[in-house]
Image 1 (cartoon, rainbow, N blue to C red):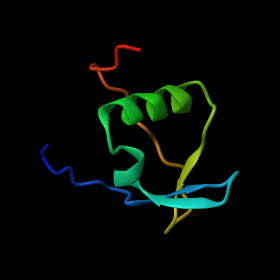
Image 2 (image 1 turned 180 degrees about the horizontal axis):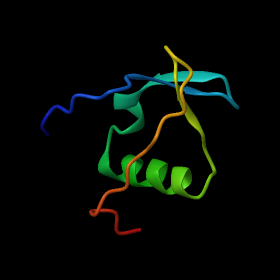
Image 3 (image 1 turned 60 degrees about the vertical axis):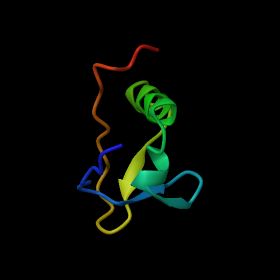
Length: 65
């Protein structure tokens, strides 16, 4: 798998107070699809730990549900 340079590396879930790396969130393709789905339907909000800016999660044309 090719390395991806991420704009935001540390992700903060405000509701749970959990801090994780973006690489952990998107560790596998299946995990990535699930995070994207939850983000798109408003089930999760992710924030940059450094600047507290809401993180956008892009869609993927490989998402097949």
